Structure formats: structure tokens, C-alpha cells
Amino acid sequence: MKTSGFRLLQLGTPWRNLSYIIVETDEGISGVGEARVLGKTHTVAEYLKDVERHFIGYDPFDIEALYRRFTLLDFGKAGEVVHTGLAMIEMAFWDIIGKATNQPVYKLLGGKVQEKIQAYANGWYTVERNPDSFSLAASKVVAKGYKALKFDPFGNGDLELSRPELFKSLEIIEAVSDTVTDDMQMMIEMHGRFAAHQAVEIAKKIEDLNIGWIEEPVRPSDNPSLEKVRIQTSLPIATGERLYGASEFREIWSANNVDVIQPDITQCGGIFETKKIASTAEIYSIMVAPHNVGGVISTLAAIHLCFTLRNVKILEHFNDFADPFVKDAADSYPEVKDGFFSLPEKPGWGVELNEDFILEHPPEKNKDGINLDPGLNMFEKIDWAKSCLLYTSPSPRD
Image (cartoon, rainbow, N blue to C red):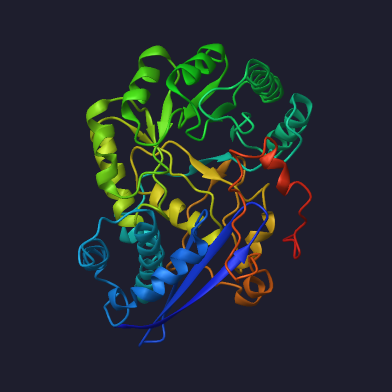
């Protein structure tokens, strides 16, 4: 079997753009990959056209050789764009392999070691940034059956909050805490905003709440600042969504500053690379909670992988609240039930893309025809999350 061609599709939403690749083979089997590319949707699409030589005309079963071609043969250091393009291709290859062998992908990765995967809700706080609005939105997460949720209450904070903004953010956290049930955990998203002293101050003020973790309290890869936070708080710390490939996690293993790592399959180079990262984390007794803000394909990829990991903690889920119409991009969707994902059993990813639907909902473009990427304003607009508030699915799923 050899790959013979590919097509690119893009789905636009108010919160994020989703990019798809369909890779075809000479045996009539095709596979699908997906990524949410923040700020670089156009760049990754053009990159994939440039590196067709790395993935067309090859056997899709040869995953390690695919990694070698993408990360070595172009000589330059592989970063976000390369690892994202590689991940999209690699996911499509796994879909092809699963269909060719009539097996779900998780069975090709060593088989299941979990019976179900807990989900936590994100994307639910597309509301006015005040305690009452966040509380009302959180009550809908509770009603949906989730036992964990994540949110960023910090407006457009950068390095340090003004005192009024700090107190407002803390009031929002307390309001959500008062709303959720006693058995629910809150993950506090910091988006790498803060200087160490500010992250520490926030952490100390919420240590008596039911906090699952504080996420990216300082800039990605700023390990000295992360160590300062680690020393001064008892709260679990999570990070890793903006580390690209296994090599960028190297300092995490030696520093012992992190309790939970969050590799994003769609930005780490794909399933194999993320599994290598997770396996290394297990050696250090670090839990894994993959970052997942994509649509149906990347969510399925994360689910399949999580079922094979001994040290999986929980999986992020976006699509019950923000941009729920993205579920219609395929003929079925892996729904969360009672706070958990179930084991997928169909070959490959087990879904077929609704290409017509995706084509009907392209990303917005500027005057030069370049995709506009939503979600790039969290350090500019203090109410950035509210931009998604009024969007209604053009084709709601029952």
C-alpha cells in the first residue's frame, strides 16, 4: 500500500479554526487527520503542500520513517508548524492502518489498560466576565454530568494583575467553587500569563478550594520560574500543551516541577510521539492529561491513546459548550456520558468526515485571502471568551 494523494479542508468557528487532511492510498483506503492551529492555519496548510515529498508515495504503516523524514531530512529544528503538520499526517496514517487491519487504533497501540476515560469540560465560560455569569455557566457543566471543569478567569492579564483585576479573578474562582458539587475539581487555566510571584500569590489564595491543578502558571519552558512556583504552593501544577515533540519535555523530567503533563497530540507530532512522552512521564510518576481543544478527529485520537496509558489522569473536552456544531463535521461523535468517554470499537477512527458541511463553514479571511484566526486576543481583550457567546450551530446535532 502506498499513499497517492491528499486534500485539505478547514472549518471555521468563533473560537478556533479546525484543519483537516484526507490522505488517500492506491488501495482506495483514506485516512483523516485534524489539528487546531492557533494563528497559523494558513501556514500549516501551505507547509503540508511544501512537504508532500515526505508523505506521498510511502507505506502508511511505516510511522517511524514518517517521523524521521519530517524531523531530520529538512535539517532545520522542528517546531510548532512541523510537529502540527506531522501530527495531521500521522493521524491520517493511523486511520488508514486501522481500516486496513479492521482494528480500532487503540488496539494497534498496545490495547486498552483503562475501562473508561474521565473528561473535564472546557469552553463553557463564553459569558460576561463576572462571578454571576461564570456561576450560571458552571451550573450547566454540573447539569451535564461532568465531575471536573477548567477555566481562565484572568481577563487579558499579562505577568501581573492590577489589584482590582486580581480580586475580580479570585471572586470568579470562588463563585464557580460555590456552584460546583463537592466531588468536582476545578482546573485553573493561567495560559502562561504570569510572573512567578503573581502565580504564587494566586495559588496561595485558592489552596483551600478543590483545585485539580493550576495550568501553565508561567511562560512555557520557563523552568526557573516554574520551580519558584513549585516550591511555594501545594497545588498540583500542569503544563506542556505548548511543548512540541518529546525533546522539549526533557527539562521537565529532570526538574521535578510538574505533577501533570499535557502534551497535545496535534502539536507534538502525533500519537507515537505523545505515547513516548507519556511513557517517560510514567517513569517519573507524572500523570498525563492530554490537551485537547480540537474537533471529532483529534478528540478520537486522544481517546484512543488515553485508553492505552497507565498514567492517564483525565482528558479535556471542548465541544459540549464552545462551538458544539463542530460535532457535525463527521457522521458520529464520541459523546461524554456521565462525565466519561467510552471505548471506541470501530476500525481506525470509526467516523467519516462530512466534507460538504466543512466546506459550507470555512474560516473567515482577510482581504488577501489569508485565514483569520479567532482566539488570538486573550492578551488583548479583557472579555476575550465572550466572543463565542452568541454563536448558534448551523446544523445542530440531536
